[in-house]
Length: 146
Image (tube, rainbow, N blue to C red; front, top):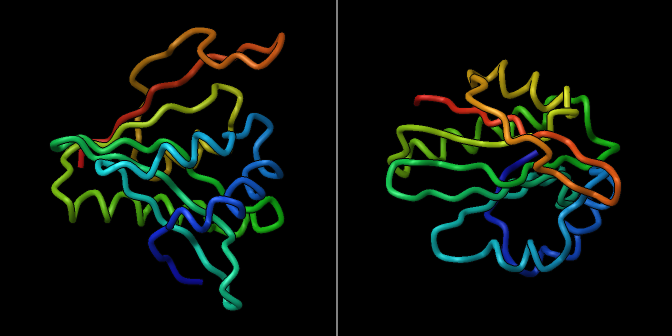
């Protein structure tokens, strides 16, 4: 496995991964809009060069924010999410970040456990932040001082 910068040419594969791995996936336009100057994004490639995971982040001054991180559903449970999260933090540090932030759906226990294992702490809640049809879930706000 190796990690490389994402490009807009990767969007169709990202949408595919997201649709299968996430019950509330980003749509294509969200991916397209995440290639602005203040954003940075990376992909996780398997030995054949196929994208198996990715993340999108933004750095504004010293504040790093994770917007999306996803691993292909058939590759989950192998530590690749942790590899991507650690890369995100390392990349942020190399760009001068002193704090990292993210929000996660309150029902996403696996992600919350991973973030806590990597040093993030819960800092707040946005009630009913995620809405999908009749379903609502809180957003757990998390932060890490780097």
